[in-house]
Length: 465
Image 1: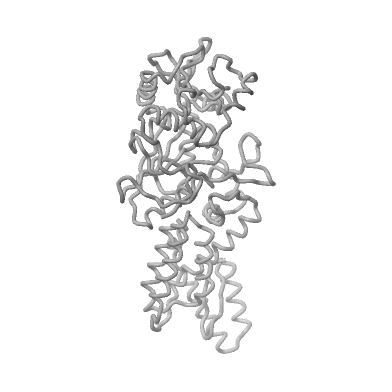
Image 2: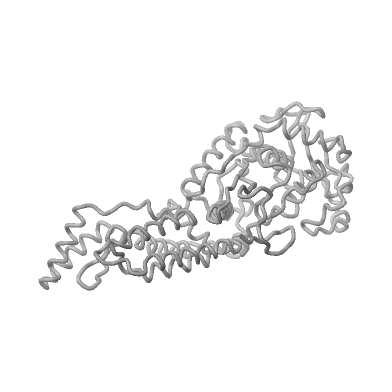
């Protein structure tokens, strides 16, 4: 399996530390508001990575975190904690906000057929591990304390700029506009923030340095290493995490352990709408609830995500959702052929479906090339007019593979009712007798019930409108 590694800036063969196990960490949501479509693009993509790993014969151990404390409005350790901001906005406690939006995220995962990770971990449930990691860094001389917290001294980690290829001199030159003049270097970041003396936070804990809360970056390092070990096989996230969050994770983790933090880094590119990156700050985000309110099934969003490569800058629009919905209708029509098998020999069905399955597998194992995988599925959907009863087992196996590899839920559909089958039979009888009035009337009646018909030789194939 080949993947693009941000660490080396090239596509490379995956080489897990202890195959067939593969450890994967995904930076999860900050649960202070509803996720928007750009967030969901990211999580569908990493779910697809997990599915592809399974297809390749690996056993992924997948950890996804909930950031439920410590993520400040500015990624550079300035401003208000997003959870506290959400609490003030809604007149709730930060704990209540985290629980509500955490549950909403879990519901969204189910709607988009995102598999449940091996571990879903919360920052607030791992405070001791985070304090212990800061203490380890302190013992090794990487920290210093200023008025508002404990900071990591990036000057003591010479490789700090390597991952994101940062220009630290330029950062330092701009330090005169820094909000925190006590920092030694513009790139230094908070490991532990002190609670303001003049206010009571909903979320704060005692520590060796004083009452406060963890920095955003230390959370991911502590939790990923607890569940996956000191060196990860794969770390995933959005491209916007590269210059700050992931750079800081690498620095603090490798300073503490002396080992590489992750061997492969995968990053999903931005999503745009009307030429702008989708973000809550720009107010141009679209929620799953907004999409459902317009009559789209959430699974259409998943298919739309798969239509673009995770490293490409993707565009979201309602027209693109319409196109994805039409494609999904074609795929479901393909799947529904299993209810309409006709008598006949399988002929080369096994070889045909195995060949297509291998082609889709090859696409997924080639840096998650989902557009190519969908191209092949569409080709199969266009080529298959009918399925013989003898070919039905291999066809069903192929559909199961599509569901496992792409998460489309094609086998979730149910057969039409007996009454609808009777209407189709009545129409066939009318067509044979050239009674076009009855044939048209029964076709219209079926369409009202959401069933379309495609006539083939002396029979009809039904599909869902």
